[in-house]
Amino acid sequence: MLAEDGVLLREGLIGLLHRCGHEVVAAVGDAEALIAETGAHRPDIVVTDVRMPPGFQDEGLQAAVRLRTGRPALPVLVLSQYVQRRYAADLLDSGDGTGIGYLLKDRVGQIEEFVTALGQVADGGTVIDPEVVRQLLRHRRDPLARLSPREREVLASMAEGRSNGAIARALVVSEAAVGKHIGSIFTKLDLPPTDETHRRVLAVLAYLRE
Image (cartoon, rainbow, N blue to C red; front, top):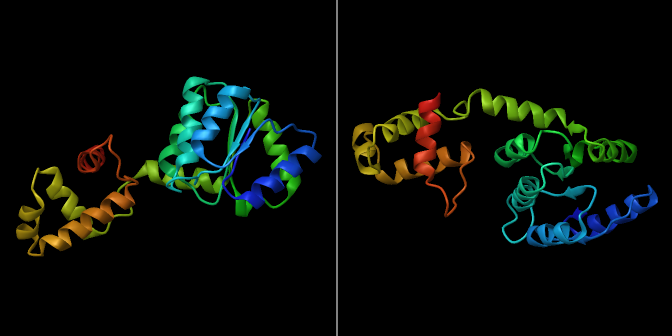
């Protein structure tokens, strides 16, 4: 099962997989189709990109996590341009941790390397690009490490339950500046806007854990 929104890359991967003796049961360009077609075809392995329509954020990776939730033993190989730490960690924690791959497109040096990784993941192995491991370990070690001293001050005030206006008065800055700092905190802590979570609360929890 192949999910890649770029038409040229998707067709190229289909041809490559066929030449290497694999059958592509379906090839789609968005996350919802990935979930639907995986349920319909019950493939041996899913290969997916991270950024897919409609938002081009992390839809492909979220779909992979959903698929592994429903079918924990389903092998999944993520082929991406970058490391999406939030859902990458969820994917690695899914099922029993086997049958998972996360490769960065720009770091796959040879076709044989990709094909070998595909076979290893399909057989239940785990193949993770060292750069993915490095970023995940660094982020888990200290999620606040990327915050500036001022952003840490703002987050500490948020943890005390202060409003943006109260933080602005305490730090002698404008309320708009506080809003910009909070937006930067959300970005650096990988807290995208969603309807299901309260980012301010999650940021404070991250601060309290550290």
